[in-house]
Structures are given as structure tokens and as C-alpha cells.
Image 1: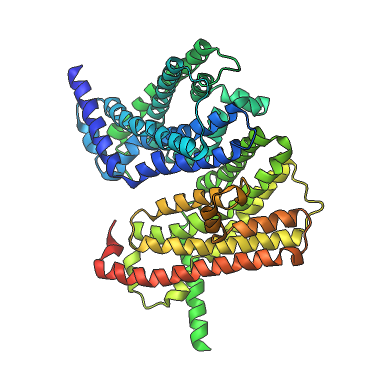
Image 2 (image 1 turned 135 degrees about the vertical axis):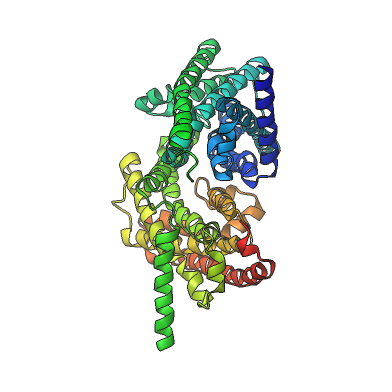
Length: 261
Length: 266
């Protein structure tokens, strides 16, 4: 167990160091979130706008940045190794692949969390926006649940991106669709009923709902149900990921096709 | 005359080759992802955001603005990628070593992207009509089409400017991402330019799209060419300025890249 933790920590450390020097990383956690937050705040903070609107502008950019880092950096955990020519070494080590991927994703999520800092600063200094009814405890738990949700999605996407490269293109093209369905910058309740049904199958939708509710005094506050829904769906994704990792291992070791660029 | 014909042949060949070799999305999956899903989801996201903030009655403002901004998908991403991908595929040193006319080679980068930009806006407008009931009955359709062509040309001009940076920068596509999303903030796509701080308003009017989108909104409301002619002329001037600036930067950076061996850095 200790050796696995050590391997995961090494992957985490390397991942953080690589992100520190990668311009793409800064694009995802710094530039993108600020730009989306700017558009969101301009649109949502009209004179006389409800305080709930401004909260969506304040946190929305950060959520978008956090998600971008989770699915792009986290999800490309295996693809990056393929690109760097280190995939064979990773597979040849006795450490299970998921342990290394786990460490890398944690590194990515750490950077993703940073996305809330520049967007909060922009909201506060540029638009005098604050969180009016912040319940710090519930906010922290909701952010934790959201992190678990993003972590599980990234862990699931990693083998998917490696097995079928077109999945990445599709998700990349659908990125703003995820913002819509997960309610990053406006409530899912404004969507058509069928779209709300699709949104309900995504774990971030519930975690984001709880996160916003923890900053507002009005509206429903069914935190336990929302947290449970997010955690349950995240665990379901992990169940699917188990089979995908087995398939990746088979492709890499038996057919030898995985390292083909 | 013979020289002109030769340059024309270089232009046509360069246009064709950059289309077949450098259009990464020219696969069925890539096309669906970046030319169908991305426009649909971009329009949906900003329309729903706008509806949440301002009410259903303003949906068309957001839908039309974002449908038109999609030209930048081809004009910015496409044009910058054609230079950036030369580096990635290892053909940039060969291109720079060739005796081909630089002006011809440079401007040939835009042709397919301008056509692609127009096609993308048509997809965007179709989505807007189908999903949000954009009513074009009173629109000046010919003028709207002219606006779309002009916007596609001017965004490609801006793309040429930033594409030049690809000569000395490894990750020029990062610049494409920044420029593409910056246009969403400063060009009056989702909120009027007048809401921006004074300095940003100046930037806004120095960029493509700002006047073009305004002209297209007016054309969609039934305005005549006489009413929006000034906006379109200004839009063209801005685009041309960026394109010429891009060409000058291209020549400058070409020499710099050659001296430092930067064209091979990967």
C-alpha cells in the first residue's frame, strides 16, 4: 500500500511540475476561466439583476476552468504518455496503471481549483460581486463532492480517450454543452425538460447545484440528496472505468497497438 | 503576364495543399465535433445564459451574435493552425526555404478558411432559425449575406496577424484560443460594446467583428446597404489593416526564425 501511495505521489509531483511550465495549463486555469467569467459577469450583472445571477457569474468562470482542467489534463493522462513516448515504460512498471493516472489527475485537479482565484478576483474588483449568503461548511462539502465528481470523470475519460481518440474530439466539440447541462453559469431549471433529464445523469450537475445553493439563502436546499446523487453517479462512472482500464491493459500488452501515435 | 499566371498557380496550389494537408478537422468525426457540435453548443450556451439573465425576449440577440462570431472559428483557429501545423508536421523549414512569393503564400492561407467561415455561419444561422425561431422575413438577406462574407474576410485578416507568431512560437494555437474567446468579450457579441470600459471600447473598434456584427444585426432587422455601408467599410478597413500588419510581421519573424533556427523548434 505504501509503495502504491509513493508511486501515486511521484506521478502527482511530476504532473504538477509539468503543468507549472506548460502554457496550456495556464490557458485552462487562468485565461479561459477569466474570459468566461468576464462574459458571464457582463451579461448577468445588469443593473437591478438578482443576487443569484451575480453568484453564477462569480463562480461560473471558476467552474468552467476547473472542468476544463479536469477533462482535458486529467482525461489525457494516457494520451500524454503516448505522445511523450513513455507509455511503454509506464506499462512495464509493476505499479498498476490506475495508480499512476490517479496521481496525475490529482495534480491536474489541484491546478483546476486555482481557476476560482482569478475569477473571484475579477468578480470582486471588476464587478464588486460577492457571495451574499455563503454557508462555508456546505460550500466546502459541495466543492469536495464536485472534486470527487471531476476526479471520477477524469479517471473514466482517461482510458476512453486512449482507446477511441475520436471521443476526445467529440467531447472537445461538446465542451460548452457540458457547461449547459451541468449548470455551470445558469441553473439547469431554465433548460427544456428533456435536457434537464439528460443533465440529471451527470454527476457535476448535482454537485454544482449544491455548490450554488450553499451561497444563496433562497431556493431549495436539499444538500444531502444532491450530494448523494453526485457521489452515486461518480461511483457508477468508476465502475465503468474498471472495465475500460482492463481493456486498455489488454490493448497495450497483448496487441501492442496502444503506443501507436 | 506570365509572371502573374505563375503567381496565380502558386496561389492555387498553396491553397489546395494547405487544405488537404493542414485541415485537421477534415475527417467525419472532426467535422461533426468542431463544425457541428461546437457551433450548436456555443449558441445554446450563450443563448441560455442570456435568457437566464435578461429574459426569453432577448434570445435572438444572443443567438445572432454568436452565430456570426462563429466565423472566427475558421478565421482565427483555421488560419493560425495553418501556420502552426506546418511546424508540427515539420514542413515549416521547407516552406521558408522555398523561393515562392511570400505574399502569395501568405494570403493563400485564408481562402479555404474564409469559405469555411461562411459555411460555419450558415450552420449557425440555421441553428438559430430552427431552435430559436429567428425570423428573417423582414431581413435584408442579400445584405446579411454580404455582412457574413465581410466578417469572414476580416476575421481571417486578424488570423493572419496572429498566425505569423507561429513562425517563432511552438504553441501558437494557444494564441488562437485566447483571441477567439477575447472576441466574445470585446466585440459586442453578447452585450453592447458601450458597457465596456473606455479603453476596451477603443480595442473593440480596432478589431474585426465589432462593426460587422452590428451591420449584420441591422441587416437582419431590414436595414439597407446605405444604412450599414459605413460599418461594412470600416470592418473591411480593419480587416485589411490586420492582414497587412500580419504580412509585415510574417516577413520580420521569418528572418528572425531563420537566424535563430526557430522554425525547427518543436
